[in-house]
Image 1 (cartoon, one colour):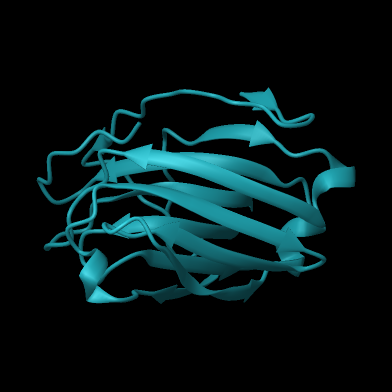
Image 2 (cartoon, one colour; image 1 turned 45 degrees about the horizontal axis):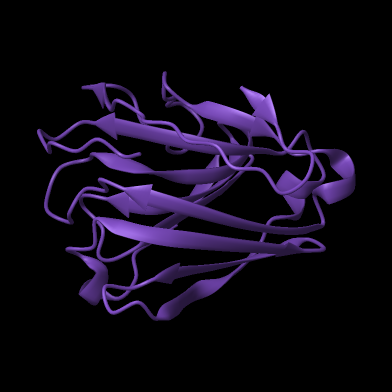
Length: 168
């Protein structure tokens, strides 16, 4: 666990929690979330670039890996891959109720990317670099319930479907 104070770089590898719990609808939890605190004065005006390698390919099962803007397991914004969802997946959970979405199927085989999350006020815009090196927009999300809390940048991975992957 660390804290962001300005432009900083971190490197880490997350070993997916085998048959571990994921995050979904308030009652589940992941045992291997790595958090970096985001100071209060940065929460409403922030650009995060996160390079990720070793993401899982879309297939079947419930394995997942990605990044999160996170206050707790009932209030978070997840961006990454979920083996049962098409493309880059997002989950926006507020007070234990989750809205999960997939995106363009052209990202199903994408295992290396850079995510960009731009937080402006109470919204977050998610983009990623596709296999051709071009930025693709996933969408803009209301994250007021996260920016008003003890916001962290989180990294998480869990294996619930036999998919072999190790995000770094």
